[in-house]
Length: 330
View 1 (spheres, rainbow, N blue to C red):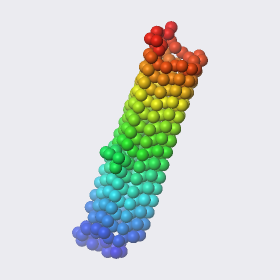
View 2: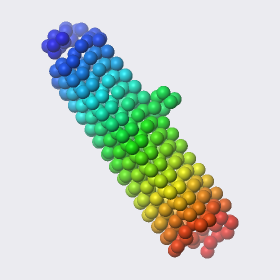
View 3: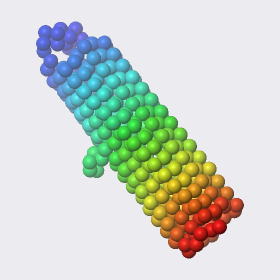
């Protein structure tokens, strides 16, 4: 079918093109709102700047398609193949992308506001500068885990997104807006979150070993039982964070702000806390074996029943600190 035939039939009121073979078709700048292209083969199709709102692309093949600047708001792309597709600057607001294949897709600066990405495969995709506010990538059960392994989300806006249980291993989220995002139970090991905003984020039970969190804002984040072993948190702002039962062994937190942090029952063995600010932090029953507390500020901190064996205390500030035996250091 050539482009003009399709456009003429659509203009006459026909909307059902289910299963159509449209490989390499040029429909750039076309208005195809509400058309049914379910099961269509549109590999290498050119849909640049096309109006495709509420289009049914369910299980369609759009591999290597050109969709830059296209309007796909509220379209149905469930189980669609968009691998290697160009969606640079496309609008996918409220779009259904469940189980879609977006591997190596270019979604730079795309609008995915409130999109449904459950079980979508975004491994290796470029989402730099994309807006994913309110997007849903949550885990309902192990079958529906969104895969963003190795994706580029640098400076992306994901505020309020649901990434519970998602696979974000080795993802670049540097300078991204992740405020109020749920990462509960997500896999973020080896990810780069340098200078990202994680205010009020939920990181409970997440795997974040070897993660780069330098200069990250984790103010008031919920991170109980998170695994941050070997992570780099130098100069991060972790004011009022909840890290009860967290694993922070071998973690670097030099010059990190941990004021009023809850570190009860956490494992800080061999942690590097040089010049960290732990004013008014609670570390009840925390384990700090061989931790480096050189020049650390523990003013008014609570260390009741904490294990401090072989920890390094050089020029440590202990004014008003509650020591492991319950005594107050003067």
